[in-house]
Amino acid sequence: MTQQLTTPKKSGSHGAAPPSSVRPGFGDWARRNRSFLAPVGALIVMIIGFTIMSPQFLTVGNGVNILLDSSVLMILALASTIIILMGSIDLSIGSTLAICAFTGALLAQETGDNNVLLLVPIVGLVCGLLNGLGVAFLGLPSFLVTLGSFFVYNGLANYFSGGQPVTLMPGGPVDWFSGTIGGVPVIALWAVVILVIVHLVFRYTRGGRYVYAIGGNEKTARLAGAPVRRVKVWAFAAAGTLAGIAALLQLAKLQSASPDMGAPYMLPAIAAVVMGGTPLTGGIGGALRTVIGVLVIAILSNGMVLAAIDPHLQDVVQGVVVVGAVAVTMQRRRAAVVK
Image 1 (cartoon, rainbow, N blue to C red):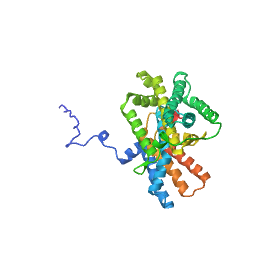
Image 2 (image 1 turned 180 degrees about the horizontal axis):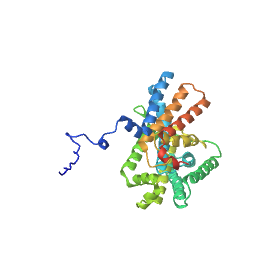
Image 3 (image 1 turned 90 degrees about the vertical axis):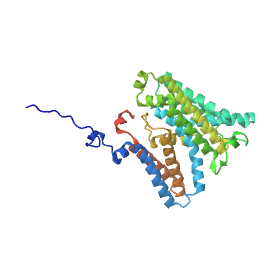
Image 4 (image 1 turned 90 degrees about the horizontal axis):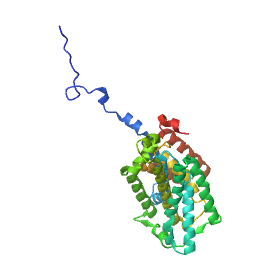
């Protein structure tokens, strides 16, 4: 008597689907996207909490203030996103803003023409290019290269200014980037334009894909034919250019340049990137996620001021929030490469 061999039925309308084809539930989806859901959840909780603590928080006027305060940070955070996605870091982003702003302010003062302020992004391009060349061709860690340039650019800004602020006269770019359109600050609109450009570059260009590949695994990207050195130089140059644009908008906002104007932005820019779900190890995340991190930092700072929280405690709260966000968003499987 022979035994008849039968084959299992294919999944369909007359058979149960194999376990591997079962769609994951909400819990699985939430675990995969926790680096995005965590900061969004924190943002919602903060908005509700600060609205209860201060009636002035959820007003149009305060919304404009948040946009003003977050616009420059947004552009600097996007610059940091480019570098962190690559698995590197730029500690000179704030000092690049300072040297760019001072170079433009001093040129405008000497020539009596504010139109020279349009050269400020080029100064940022040069600063970023120097960082990129040091990282790509000298074989030095980005941490050390940008730490050195942090001191260099800060020192040059203080030297050129004599430690004193430089005031700009009205006219030209100072007026172009000031004011509001439809109640929205002009510098906020520029920040949105920069966001869209950076997002499109990473999503649709070969250079953007190379940045992700290098951040994922630099050796594999090199073996696959990616021009690693060239991409690193390009990325740091792009970040420096964005820092120069941020300096131009900051000049229009303050109508002056001071030696320490970039200091408050360096660590918040990096924190915004990580809080948005882009890990320091690189290869994951993007510009749109950085927006969430920027809003978390801007709303947290604004809300604590309106809630009359002690300034010293504000630093404590911000530090706890940053550490908590990193703990939630960090991928444990890649923790071994975080130094």
